[in-house]
Length: 246
View 1 (cartoon, helix red, strand yellow):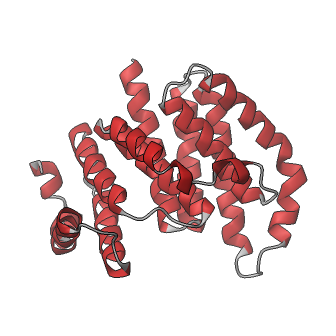
View 2: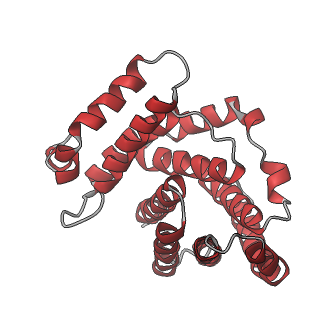
């Protein structure tokens, strides 16, 4: 761990949690239990805190945090909930991309393909499921550098924007009163994500980053831990790709 990262207040304050999680990942031979999962998530949150605050992370720190976070996420069981599963895959892909572990991500994804419910979810009548799985699908294709990824991303983004009027009202009306605000914020995050998709294919780095930052901010207010984490890493991974292309 380089000095910039090890001296960060979050890494110093929660060092015991991080050390315990890393020990679990290294020594555990079977699936993690609930307590293990909670400990690993604490460590992930600590690493991600090191990317924020009054001490801006440099590129070396970001790559080191991404690598540590990738292996922690890699140790977690695949979520059963399809939306959580989607953001889990996105977090894995983004941290793998930034840390240089993308081949490991592809290997894991291929080995666990039967556990993912992508095809059914992408045509779901549930608006949030439809949005998140479609957007994640086209971004993962882009990260894999598939030759038709850009045209598919643009097509899917346009389609989702058109479908908003068809699905949104029904989705929000089906939420419990105390959950509507959070559901709406997650949709706002996805709409910015869709807008980012449209400009990402044109290599407009400023507009892409702006939309993804708005997506992260909205998700931070309405999403779960894994959703917030994924949107943060999507922003960082996109900036990483755009820097490489310059």
